[in-house]
Length: 236
Image (cartoon, rainbow, N blue to C red; front, side):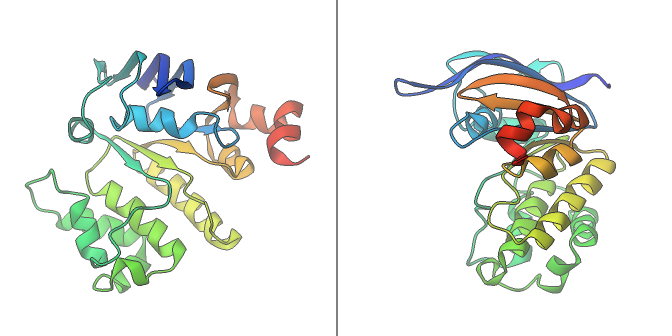
């Protein structure tokens, strides 16, 4: 296993009096795919949002590339090399595909041609629809656009919150193929996913979250074979 590019230690996140994340610690090895699985309300999204700077943790450290980024604002975190593909895609429906992609590079002041070409190679459908309004795309195409927009900042780590939510099974397979391809091209992936079967088949490392705590960890294969994981998350 390679060195960790992202280290979470004793992270606690509160919303008012509710403790959503209760002191979790885990590492994300550089160049790998890591998944957090668990039921709704387990604290997975809160974890990603705190890493992205959208929620200020109550306690703990978030170390990225050797630097503590805990509590820094989202712009600073994107600049350092972490992007989030949010649940629900959150594209700009009235802007074109190309305009949405350019927004992903809003902190950059260099030529975007190579990166646009890279995104279009990953998602040929987006190239075909580059002048189409984002809101007119299908659900799967909007998810492609959300991922492509995140890649335009040239991240070292891309975090994805429920990328398969609401998509047809065939489209889901395509999204996971793209996740593997992005990772193969050098981007570390931190993935939250309710489709535990696909997530664990894709990930090198997996963590199970329950009510704000990490209760299990292992390789994707180990967790797929675990009887408790099978009963709780795989329907077997």
